[in-house]
Amino acid sequence: MSSLNPLHTIDKQIKEIITTHKEINSEELNQTVLKLFKEVNLNDLVTRSNIYSYELSGGQRQRVMIAMSIANNPDLLIADEPTTALDVTVQQQILELLNNIQKERKMSILFISHDLGVVNQIADYIYVMKEGKIIEHGSKLEIFTNPINNYTKELVGFKNKFRKYEQNKEKAILKIENLKVWYPIKKGIFKKTINFIKAIDDINFTLNEKETLGIVGESGSGKTSLVLAILKLIKSSGRIEFNEINLNSINKKKLKNLRKDIQIIFQDPYSSLSPRMNVEEILSEGINVHYPKYSEIEKKQMLENILKETGMNYETDNNKYPHEFSGGQRQRIAIARALILKPKVLILDEPTSALDVSIQNQILDLLEELQFKYSLSYIFISHDMNVIKSVSDNILVLKDGKLVEYGNTKKIIDNPKSDYTKKLTSSFI
Image: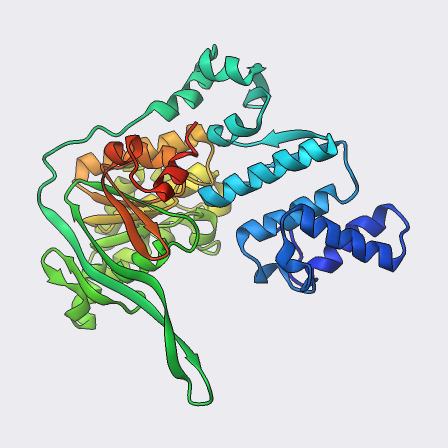
C-alpha cells in the first residue's frame, strides 16, 4: 500500500514506469498497460484502469506492483518480502504468478523473505544471512534437509514445532453461542434494507482457561469481525459469555470494568503505539483509566515489573519513544501494555507477521512463558499455519463468516476434513 501513490491512478503509475525508460506513442502505451494487466491476472481492471490503489485489495495491489516491475522486461526481478502481509491463499496466487512470469520472460528472481515456507516454494538456491553476513548457502534440498549452521537449524526447525496439548484446561472462560455480525445492505431513497453481508454467521466455540485458540482464514473470512464483536466494538447478536456474564446484555459501566480483562495486541506495533508518547506514557494509559486511585509509587512499581517480565528495562527504556526501538522490542512494549492490566483473555491479531523467524520465536516463547505464569487464555489470529500449529491447543477455521472446522490443532492439521483447510495447510514448509 505504501509503495503505490494514492494520489495517482494505477493506469498512470504503470505508464510512468514505461515512459521514463523509452519513447512510445499513446496507443501502443495503452495496449502495453492492458497486456500487463492480463499478464498479472488483473483482467477485471482492463475496463477500469483509472482507479486508485486504495480501491484494490492487498493481492491486487501486489499484482499492480509486479506489473510495474516487469513493464520494461528486466533480466532480474528483486522481490523484497512480496507476500508478507497477504493471507495464505493470496500468497499462493502471487507465488504462482511470479513462477509463471519467470518462465515466460526467462528472468532471474532474487527473493527476500523471512518466511521459509515461501522460500521453499519459490527458491532454487538459498543464502542465509545473519547480522550482515552470509552464514550458509546451498541448494534448497541441502538447506532444508541438512542445515549446518545453528542459526539455519533454528530457522528450519521451527516448522516441526507443535504445541504440547494439555488436558487440564477444563474451565471455560469465554463461550460464544450463535454469534452473528450482519451488516445491512441498504438501497433506495428510504434506505430500505434489502439484504445483509454476513461477516459472521452463527459461530459457536469455547475458550478455556490457559488455552490458546488459533483462528485462521483468508482475507474476508470474518476474523476481524469476530474479534471486534468479542471486544464489543461492533454490534452483534448471540451470546458472548465471559466468566458467565453475557456481554451483550450488560450496561456500559459494567462493560468498562470488564474491558481490562480482555486485551488485544495488534499486528503492527509501530502503528498501534502512539509516536508522540514515550514508553511510560503508553503503559500508564490503562492504569490511569482502570486504576485511577493508584499512587505514583504503585504505578512505577507496576511499570518496572511488567517491563522486566517482557524483557525490557525500566531505567533505560521508560523515556524512549517507539521509533527508538526495533520491531521485536516494539512488540514487547505492546505486550507489556496489554498485560499491565492483568487480563484473563489476550487477543493476538497477527502479532508476529512483520517479524523475522528468530525474533518471531522469541516473541512466541515470551507469550508462552507469560501464559503459563499468569494462567492466561489466548485467541491467536494468524494466516501463518506454521505459527498457529506451534502455539494453539485448538484451531478454528473460518471461511466467508462460517465455521469450517473446529477442534484439536494437531488432529485438524494432520487430517483436514475440508478442501479449504487442506488449501490453508498446504502453505507448510
